[in-house]
Image (cartoon, rainbow, N blue to C red; front, side):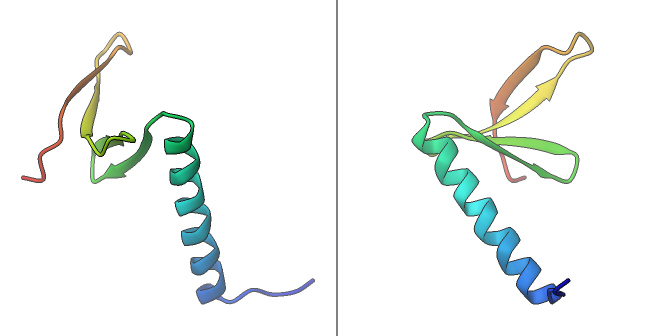
Length: 67
């Protein structure tokens, strides 16, 4: 079995992440990432929205603010 360095693994993860983002946007949908306790959705048009899940599981979105 071949071993992989931490640097190679980090590069592979970055490549896969960017490919997934591009694929989501090409499909016309958002990609999601977390920032602390916040869930951020990035849409193909560049909008960033914070996704907030209610107790019922319903998702509400509010405009993302870095503050």
